[in-house]
Image (cartoon, rainbow, N blue to C red):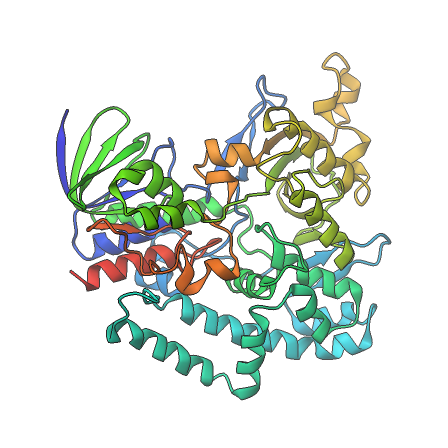
Length: 527
């Protein structure tokens, strides 16, 4: 067994792990990032896919899990990621709600253009759109500031130093103005239905906005706290539509380049199987090949359950802490379907959602509550060149009947059949469903190749426990000072020198880098 000594070891080269590593490297710490996969990026990657045997000659590339995205502006600036090739899109594509008729609701990033489309559904709603956008953007600014605040360990060990951050956050809230402040406070625990119904009358517009509230979480639009998840996703996206579609890998590449240029090290195919602990103090990590790496500080970008219950082990932790960790709600219910087409799919650029009305969205969630795949799913669709990517909800990790070895094909067919009702070319001819000995049919096929990622794949391939994209559901009892668990919201653990920096901590969920930034700052400021 070999031994290596580092100041800091980071488990997982997802975007939060890489952000934290870059911060440590910039502080002149000897830092090593360990990634079990052959590529860095975690669930924020652009990967090559192809059938086995391949239907397409060379396979194809797609944003595997997260559709594009962006880091918080202060992270990009602090790490000078522009010099490492990170160039976010300057033009945001529209957010399009598909309707049963051809009259789609097109919400352009230009509020005036969006209002023109809304007029086809409601003159009153069109008149309110500018005001709604202003409120959401102002509220997102507050949430961004809140996510940059290290949460105190309420109700235990509250200190003035930690409380000062809350005082600043309270001042930011008050500076919003009394009316907006009260509306924001009311919004967070509300259901998405309650929130949108206070603003608008058009069913099409209400459903389009509410769909963003349930994106990536196992909640329905009538679930309490989806007012909060709406704001959370709005803040991460910078609005309704995704940005940098097809460019998830560019974020990872820029972060990887930054870490290495600052002197940090990244090792892929280096799976951590154990975090070494002696007398409640971290000593380093052990890899799957038996290699031991020593460090006084270890940060884990893996989810809290995997980190604490598997890598550390319950025997090293207080019983009450173990019980709370076991109770973290994961409950993933997302599948991804990537389709390589010949370009004749007929789908416009932008972020498209299948959310015709609020009842449709709630019924899609109802299936997941009972362990079933939604027969009429909520879909979000993006395109990048000839590739069509479909975010499918709801497909619960735990199925009442069947398993994910066989149900992946069902999700794939449901996605194609459902989309085919709006884009007939997708159903007209599909290569993957045609016999190979029919060359004429193959030549006319629109869908050439495909890749489906099930909740089980999210766990086994991408290390997401129960297929939860956010390392823990974004719920009222798992946010702010209760994330990942009450009393441990400041990235610390009962093990001295062991910290959490992944999406399961305060500020996490989706693509932002806030969790990695916050954890690194907290550790560095206390050293």
